[in-house]
Image 1: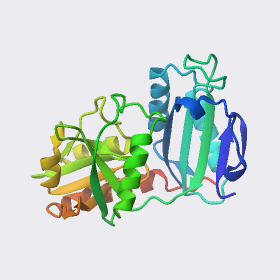
Image 2: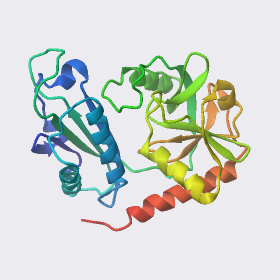
Image 3: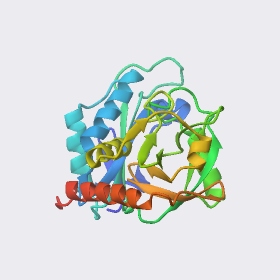
Image 4: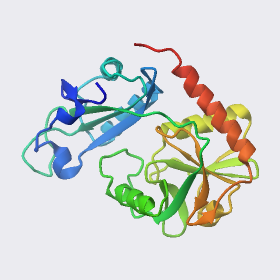
Length: 283
């Protein structure tokens, strides 16, 4: 099987799966999600992702239909059903199923899982960026299903021949990307937006910050602004599907190039960590 879908205990080929129209995802995007890479049938950083997933569900008062242990065991079981051990593992929980009503539906939520083939890039190839006005709400720190601003920004980036869009708030503060975290290197230090209500604190972001500290690279979790972005020695983008990449263009202008050696140290160290954690084939 190349791609698998799961919904409340039922699973099969992804293209054959269906869900009820009255799932609250259909009307309200009422749910949260998480996702991460899998290599050699090993789901990378699975406990970190599951902890965030359950924490986000708790903040929206969604009753989880499984425990953390049960979810981990389920993911580890499902990845073995695919033909390829390199996968992207996505899971979400919605508030439940019921006739459309803004008030909460009672009972446990609905669990969705999708597994699709995907190889994690090694980060050696640069990407191109655009900036986009950040008009999102003040719950960016919760990984909700309400992603229309990110969808639009991603489409704008695609039309511009770029791979990602960087959100900039009115006033010029840089927050994050449409589906990544963004960081800059300046004068040998890493700067990243603080983990407040304006960004999702990514798991890959956490690994980047930990790696910086292990390598003795100064880290500043502080707001930075559009001019800082445009004048950075390097611009880094991290996510669960792109662990660490650099940009060589933003808004049509050349970007970075002033600290490529430091980026390469971080990139290679993070890839070594990822490969070591997923080196043994489980199947």
